[in-house]
Length: 271
Ligand code: KIV
Image (cartoon, rainbow, N blue to C red):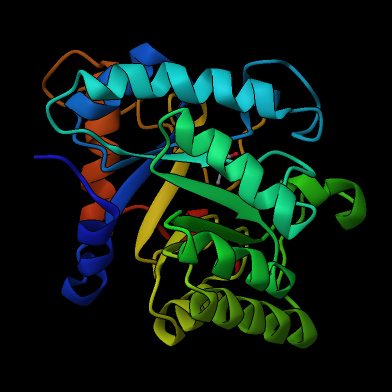
């Protein structure tokens, strides 16, 4: 049975959480599908974890199309096909017209949904994409493409002004017709507030356990990051139980921990 955006959105009412993993190639896509992961994000984080860049800014549309095609080819051979979300890279959505053209390129590469970083200023583009049948995952909080403006990879939404702005951003993007919203590195109570105030499915990363879903980068959750963020858990380290640890078991353990609400735990949260 294929996973669909519609079925994942329905889970909000059922309070059944789903899991997303950022991955960029055919082999991980196959293993994630075997573990039952519901959605795969071809994230522009590939700039850092695959290409060795020090931010996501250098990633281009050509890079995103290449990796989206690799993931989609593998996904189509799986029984339970994950929903494929493709990231729109830095400056590929700087105007409504460019957003539509570049989103169309990612959809032609086989993505089921595109993701864009930014707040209420994106509402018009999101509405146009939705109108033209392109599902959207919005992304607020820590938006890595803006790292130079933000002055580093810092927790967002800690002041009252920032809290209100993120709440307004989420409301505007929800009303514009986005289907999912990534909430990155924000305090847990704010992520809960946004999740309760909106219709779309919120996907947290460093946003506590009150969101409708979680996302992690595949290499991070396998313990391959030298300086993991506070919210990262190494699922490979404890994936074995009575069995031999394996990457497949690690992905399955992540899915199970998200569904049961065990991940993220208090130690992974920002207050
Ligand atoms: O690019 C990416 O992988 C992301 C996730 C970390 C949310 O945007």
